[in-house]
Amino acid sequence: MTSGTVSLFSLLCLLLPSLAQEQVQFNQVLNLNGDMDLNSFVFPDRSKIETFSQSQQQLIVNQQTPAVPANQVTGSTGQPFVALMQQSMSVNTNGATDLVGGQIELIMDQQMLQQNAVNPDNTYVGQLSPDRQSWMIIEPMRSVNITDTTVRIQKMNSIDGEYIALGRQTVETNNVLVPFKDQSVVIQGTGLQENEFVDGLRVSTRATQPMSFTVDVKDGVEQGMLTQLQGQQPINDFRYTVTSNLAGVQPDLSRMAAVMQIPLNVQRVQQMMQAQGAQSGQIQIGVAQRAVLGNPGGATGQLQAIGQTAPQRRARDQYRRMLLERQVAPATGQITGQTAGQTTGQTTDQTQNGGTPTSNNPVATELLLEPTFTPIQANAVFDPNNMRVAIPVTQIDGEFILTMSMGGAAAPPEQQAQGEQQPAASNGTTPAEAGEVPEAAASSAPEAPKAAERRQEAESQKGYVALSVDEINRMAETQKWGGMPPVTRMMEEYAKDMGVTLQSI
Ligand SMILES: *[C@@H]1O[C@H](CO)[C@@H](O)[C@H](O)[C@H]1NC(C)=O
Ligand SMILES: *[C@@H]1O[C@H](CO)[C@@H](O)[C@H](O)[C@H]1NC(C)=O
Image (cartoon, rainbow, N blue to C red; front, side, top):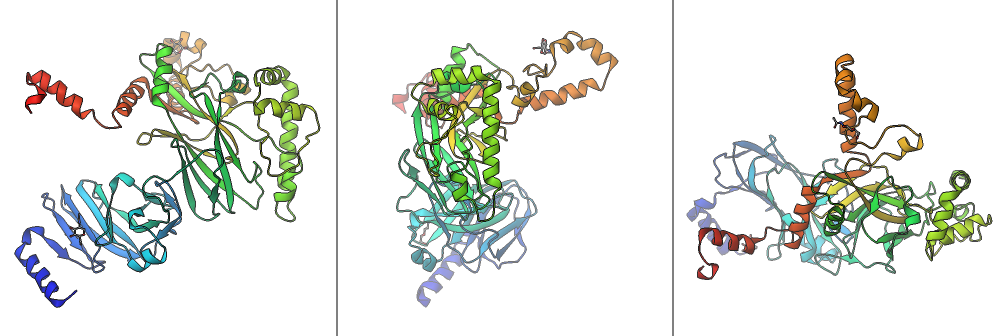
């Protein structure tokens, strides 16, 4: 930059005080005006914070060593990620939550961009997650200016947090989706990786060792696979089949944690609701898995760390337990075998019932799975923005389906297994209690709060997300309009109400 342009710039700043851009320092207490005039602060590294505010606030901004590495990222498709700043930016207000149009603009390091071969179209602001474990990318709030190599997070109501410029090292820009079937996803064994598949299935994985997996979709869900579902029914007519190189074995050497984020087809849920005549009330949505059967011997022997025998024993125990369960409930096994047809289920039964597992191959091309789906008992979260049901799993190998049931919560399997008389009623009262409601309430007051507690538990049943019939209908309608308000229809309807024709506008 020549001195000429510099002085021209200063002159412009003098002539245009309405821009009110303030050159400020890091670690300096700054005032945010509360009268909805733009606050605009430029820091020594040229990074910038701008916001309107509904109340007077104070702001202090610092540079610091990033709290977590740049490979801990959620919220984008594709990977890997690298940092495009040496230091992160930490922003603190006195708890301002009423900002308007808050935005943080970070300067990307040109050299880091080039060295890491990052396409500037693939740059993001990462915001540190509330648990300080990962950088969150929020794609709809992002803006990139390639000319001045800045990247922004925008539209914020509160700006407190830590921020870093990130680059994604992919050839593709925007969505990077993994095809089903053959393409293997490689998990590096450091960091948090998210892979999104072509239908929006997203698998968030953290592993201590490198690993790989594929996801396939298999046609149909056999009735015999559904006997453990406690009144839930599958939403789709296909299963996701996840096959990793660990083949369902978890040696101590290679630990992993994952969150499956499964897309919910609300149109399909709506049709199922309508078929059951549901006009109101709640539906419970859960995730069920056919896990991998413990492989007695073979695989574990080759995968475990030296001197560690525990995994092998665990697998054997699991296998014995499974055989015992089969003997206790032979009817179930038979039904499965008969109805499973050409599926893995039958293959499994034949192999296992023969008593001599034939394959000791650790990387089985087709894993031996439990005959039936079991609801995953973990905290499920519904992501309304992406219409996905997220649930943590300890084991990604196996098959997954989304399930639903109308009305109250599904009875948790533990209760059924123990043969308790507790019905699946959403109000949490047994029929006996229900008949004596006034008396019970009068005679034993402590009973009432207990019932209320139980009711609350039922509504947010572990392993399920509760959505109202109204919410499903609303989401189905919104989806038809691309997730946005039906703008043209609204105009049309409004014009009709006002007695004008749209052609005249
Ligand atoms: C992008 O950068 C160019 C060059 O610095 C600048 O003129 C332009 O105003 C920037 N765009 C926005 C939206 O800030
Ligand atoms: C609670 O559920 C039971 C069993 O479904 C039912 O008979 C009873 O009427 C319900 N009580 C209330 C207060 O809703």
